Amino acid sequence: MDQIEKAKTFASLHRKGDPLVLYNIWDAGSARAVAEAGAKALATGSWSVAAAQGFGDGQKIPLPLLTEIARLIAQATPLPLSVDFEGAYALAPEETAANVALLIEAGAVGINFEDQVVGGNGVHPIDVQAARIRAIRAMAERRGVPFFINARTDLFLQAPDASEHAALLDEACRRAEAFAVAGASGFFAPGIDADLIGRLYERVTLPVNIMARSTTPDLATLKRLGVARVSHGPGPYRAMIARLKSEAEAIYGG
Image (cartoon, rainbow, N blue to C red):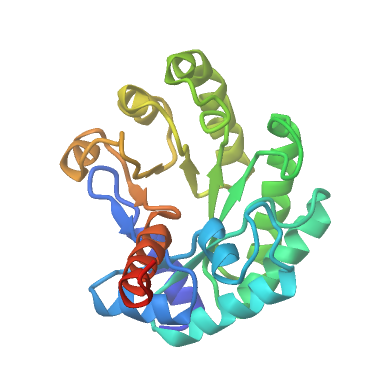
């Protein structure tokens, strides 16, 4: 498949009630392993990509290095690739779009794009984030790529007390609507209280993406709730590192 075909295929895999399951990767080697296991598409996790190179999360990994990793992953398998791009290493819409263009040139067909203020506090105002999404969409259209913009809200992650999440639902839905109008392809709400997933699905027109955590319902339940995409975030990398450390400790007597 060429890049346009991959982008179309990736979008088609987001089916409400029949979710695309993404076991997040961090380099070309993990990409090949997950592809060989039967994955239909690939997606990086920003935390994992950074950690694998010795950096912290939050756009600490240099953009040129991240772009090169994306290129190597895209070349490693024939599967569509989405890159967790955090805040796109920019604030102004034009610069945001220019940085996303680097990933398209590297072979990616989609991104996660979050509304949190990277390195700061809170989330960007809706109009600010919508303008950035609009610029990304316009850039992708000029290139003829039906790029998948998975618009992520960090409202729920920034409220670790799940009892506060119901009060955030209206704001999340307003964001989803504005992001859809701006050109987003999907809506990602990591950290949302499990009891609210169905209510979010009922009110959001975009395909809903949920991140699997210890408190997340099982896949059968997520299907019933209408989820269209399930991500695993840093979980796969953490599990791999834990096993590596355990086996090394067995050798070294740690």
